[in-house]
Image (cartoon, rainbow, N blue to C red; front, side):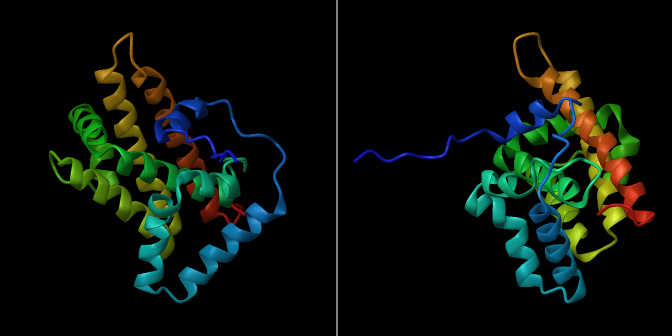
Length: 199
């Protein structure tokens, strides 16, 4: 008997697929319920072990499991925001060397957003992964709007770096557009969260 496996999509493919096209209009209540319950549970009584497991979930189980829950949610929703936070973190953690190179180049041209993201000067690939971890962790343990703003700044730096390093025959131009779209979505989500409209 043959075994069938779910197709594996590279994390960068998700970034490229966003490209500002938006998410499908219809989503299930399950996405909203799981996102709200998860965020409420962890923020009400933050347990460092649980937070650590949530950060590492996509590494252990695959980004497709998170995608099945939240990827079809609109950007202007809580599950849409959590999906994008996980996606950025997973993309960076999946290829630290490339992410470090892109972020370092982006920081050279966008030092303001590098500072907002919370990055040290001339970060190593490991420091870029750690920064992505801290941003996702902040969504569960700190001010959610601040975490979204940091994710926006991080994405702007990645977009700038991908654009700077892009050549005609690679995926970086599309990646730059995808990161720029996500940066704008994170900014909108932070505003919605502050006004109590990100549900």
